[in-house]
Amino acid sequence: MSWAERAAAVMPGGVNSPVRAFRAVDADPVYVAGGRGPWIEAADGRRLIDLVCSWGALLLGHADPRVVEAVTEAARRGTSFGLPTPQEVELAEKVTRLVPSVEMVRMVNSGTEATAAAVRLARAATGRDVVVKFEGCYHGHADGFLVEAGSGAATFGVPNSPGVPAATASTTRVARYNDLESVEEALASGDVACVIVEPVAGNMGVVPPRPGFLQGLREACDRHDTLLVFDEVITGFRLGPGGAQQRYGVIPDLTCLGKVLGGGTPAGAYGGRGDLMRMVSPDGPVYQAGTLAGNPLVVAAGIATLEVVEEDPDLYRRLDEAGARLEGSLQAALGRDGCVQRVGSMLTVFFGPREVADWRAASGVDRDRFRRFFRAALDRDVLVPPSPFESMFLTLSHLEVIDQLVGALTAAVEESA
Ligand SMILES: *Cc1c(COP(=O)(O)O)cnc(C)c1O
Image 1: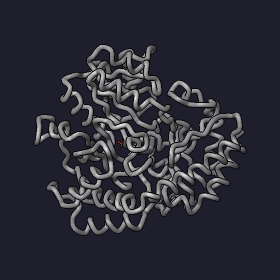
Image 2 (image 1 turned 135 degrees about the vertical axis):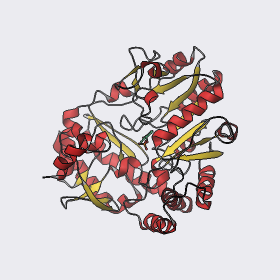
Image 3 (image 1 turned 60 degrees about the horizontal axis):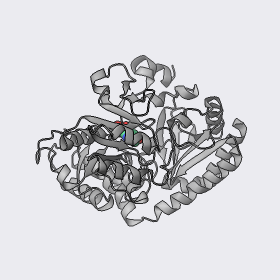
Image 4 (image 1 turned 180 degrees about the horizontal axis):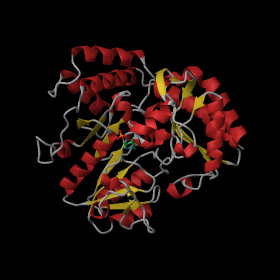
């Protein structure tokens, strides 16, 4: 029996997270035996250049020796105490040094927890219940976020997963990405606790904010006494040492982090203005806790990753250059058949639309052609994320294989036509 067959008998879809099942590309999941740098080795022995990179959690590459060393060292000292450690303080100091909006921070275990906790804090701070999110943005799987737009941009949402109570969904309002008018409508009733946004969207494929969009959100939130929450779970430490907020010069009230923060271990964090964070228990009344939060293995991997970021900030320029080369070559191969959208080391090929600024445009992609592209890339030993609505991620280790990668993916775009 294959791993896929054994897995399907004991795990829903044979996986622990849905897109790993490869359903969107009609393929069996790749079960991974190990990884090194830009490469993964599948359980069947195949070696692939990986562009999933743990959905963006890896900035340095697989099994980076600095991270492996730090985690191993930490494990020898004990894997969990449920008591604070000096290393947690060091990591918190790094995060507050690097991320402009973050004066104080609380570690959690995932991005999902980070966004859920940030929303609770925003509701407590404002005394309001409604949360505005954007169509096509993903903020983890907490009930209130599993909501899509109704017919109007500013209507109350309906749950799009069974199991989400209608009462919960009704506190989520959906606006349109890159559309400030829809935000104004959503805020008009004066009952909105926060607007939460991916400052560069990465979960409908890569959709950059149009010039003025993030600034406009900041101003609209200020006018309506609503908090602005940046979900930088992908963009934090990926688009620069200070994330998208530094890159675009817009400072949110609260910031959610995850992925790169944990250097490939299960991490999340939320942070922001000191007066807001002091409302969190035990300084304040907003309850939020975690048995394994600030876990020593996670903190060690996070420190090792952020040390590289602090010591070598030029790494973002090198990643950007590699990304630009890949983008240029893929766009040339694509011609008028679609667009390549990229910010730094995040990139998506959209087959069909000439520009994607929101979910409506993204959802119009040619899914058949994407499937052909995915297979053509796999035939050339490159693993592209198995969905047209995900970002490819480059790590520092990909710089070593950039020629091979550009050649293989460009050929895959051509073959998929
Ligand atoms: C991945 C992701 C999350 C959820 O993080 P998990 O660690 O998977 O719970 C939240 N927001 C964004 C923007 C993400 O990309």
